[in-house]
Structures are given as C-alpha cells and as structure tokens.
Image (cartoon, rainbow, N blue to C red; front, side):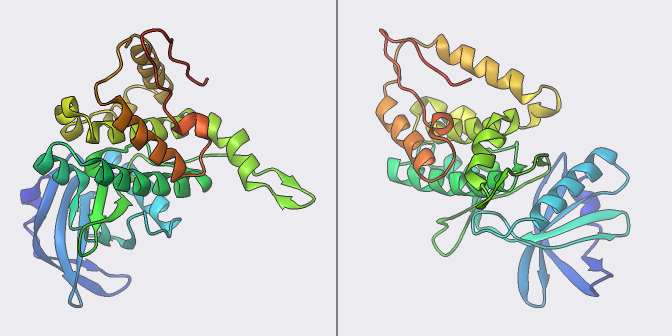
Length: 286
C-alpha cells in the first residue's frame, strides 16, 4: 500500500468501538504500509495502516497486535486499538516525538552519556519482553522511539517480526523460578541472543565515528526473513574474531556495552562485550 492510497481517506473508523480517527497528516510509508498522524477526541495517535489482502502484511499486523496486547511497560510503545476498516488493517499507537534514527541523522555521533541513556532504555525494554518470552527481532534506531517533553523517554516499537517463544517455567516447591526459566531456557534461544546482539551493536555505533552509515541504514532485522538468526550470529562472531586491532573508541564502546548489561537482568555473559587486544584472542559464549 502506498502513502497515496492511504491518503485517499480522510478518516478511519473503528466500527466495533464506534470511534473515528481523523487524518491529520502522513508520517511515513514503507513496505509494511503507511503511518499517519491521526486525531481522536482531541488526542493525537499514530495510525499504522496496511492492506488486508497482502498475506505478508497481514502476518506482520497480527504479530504486532498480539505482541503489544501482551505488554504494558514504560519502554514498550502502547497499543490504543487494533481494527479493520474497509480493506485496511489499522493499529492505533501512541504518537512519538521522533525516533533514535532521527537523532542520529542530526548528530551523527552521540555523546557518551546520551548513548548510555538510550542503551538503558533499549535494554530495559528487551529485558521486559524476554522475561515474557517475547523476542523483538528487529532492533534498530528507526524502531526506537522517543517520547516526553525532552524526548528522553525510550520505547521499542515495530513488532512486525516479533515472536512468542514456547516453553514452560520450571516450578519448585517454593513456586515458579523466573530466573532459572530465563537462564536455562530463553537465553539459549538464538532469537533472544540476536535481540541482544542487535541492541549491543547499535549501542556501539552511537558512539562510533565510523558508524554513521550503518547507524542510519541497517538491514539486519529485515534479513531475518532470508537468513536464520543462528547464521547471522555465527557470521558476526567470525567477523569479530578477525578483528585484531582494538577500535580507537574501544573504551567508550565498552562502557555503553556495560550499560546495556547493567540495565538488564539478562545473563552478563550475553550482554557484556569482551575486550580484545592484539595479544588476546576474543572469547565468546556459545
């Protein structure tokens, strides 16, 4: 669906709830469909619209709607409504000020304190999702939205590739052991590791002078439809092993990596980057 197609309509009606969203202006368009700025009862929302006849888009819509209906956290974008209007599938979401992508386009490279702040928000959002057996699978700057008066509230968005993992929590006489469930089951899942690898990689790029191009145009998430996360992780491990010389901004990048680890209850051996030197070989968890 093109942006022009969605602009043919000046309003979208949620017939079940008997609410009408009036279109204010377009925000963006992509392979998923379009995002519109809309108004309902004097309040502004972002309306994500896609074509009901496209099976791929419908699958993405279903994934996102199901994932967001299971979440309620300050680091996850809030879903206001999900409905079908005419031949359109619609998600009404809270409206962000901008994305981390927008910030990186303006500043190219973030101050260390800012990068750590965003890293904490991303890590906290992933921690919340993973503890509930949900993996995002598309962490990148464009899917990190900023809210609040000063745009310092960090929330994860775009759950079109999200998955809910299968698995049962281990129970003891004292009850369910949440930590054991995560450490023994979830962290072994390649999709969980992939989420964390993406978050860590983008945290590095935010303070990496050589990372401007990658930070504003990343196709890692979209490649999931063609390659499994196991293959991508293996390729990254091999590439990292070939890098003998430390990066000139190694200390800052490691500090951001530690921020990701400290902001989350995720196992430290997953979220903490091991520093290397010419004399040492990098060590990675399996």
